[in-house]
Length: 106
Image (cartoon, rainbow, N blue to C red; front, side):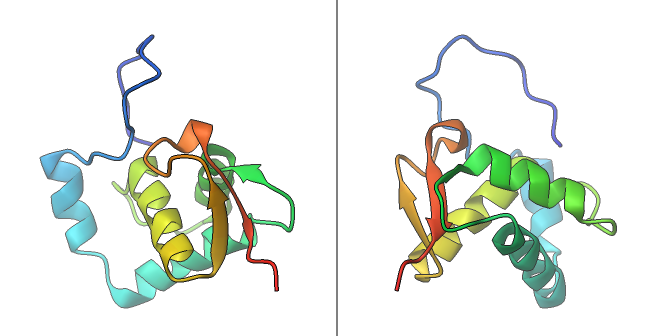
């Protein structure tokens, strides 16, 4: 995971990539993106789970995780999974510690 300076300000969004991180994720293939999405979806259940937990567990579960891809990017992918209708969310998706997701109820 990317190293971030600790802060006492819980109002800060955690979805910004550095220039180097942005350059790295721009090089991800569609296959790598699909693997990241699959890892994220494998950590979601029918119950609400914090996005930070889903992201952390997904990253740990990927034995061949692409190097240099930060947790913030994984959180952005969660947002895309919500937008595509695969997941439901409650909270502010720009703040993974304060947002929860679950499988979309049918």
